[in-house]
Image (cartoon, rainbow, N blue to C red; front, side):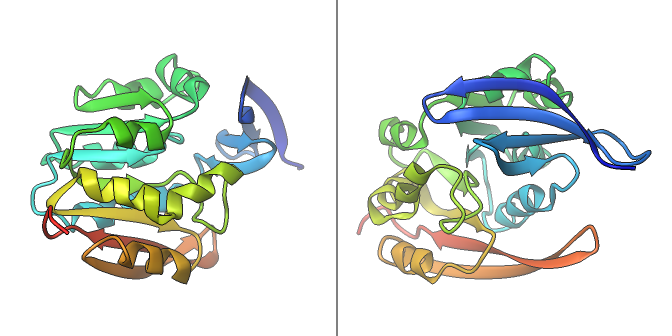
Length: 230
């Protein structure tokens, strides 16, 4: 039986078209799928990377009281962060207002449950502007998951996120002893170099995942902040 698709919601912004659609294969469960300008972003069937970035990152910081997540997506990274009771507040910066609305109004069915956690704080803004306005040393941990890495951009303008000026903003808002973790679908030596020019220590970590019977290798780039002075 062929896969059946149905459009759930659609929105237009200055960045283009955002579509949420459902699909069903044979007698399997309904899967929600997010696409930006026709390009697949993520779905509810495979959440390995979203959970992995949170799980791995939370192990890096002794007391991750304040966490910043760049990119809401379908909410699975936020959900994973909130399972850690050490987290007192998790701020998520998401540029697409429609996506936040779909989470809040139940269009994305699990969205209301995730956002009901009093520790969750969702900000609709461009991540660069949000970081520029944030106080110095505001966060213990920053997770960046707005693309599939610098080689697989959702929007061309996101290329700036992986360059030194933006990475410098990340360093400014991370507390001493904190960490920045950037997820990538592929090894990115250029990103490692850029991070190394800004942070005290950088460590790339690869990890294997099973995507419905297909083995893939993903990467987490961990940048650590030892002191506020440089």
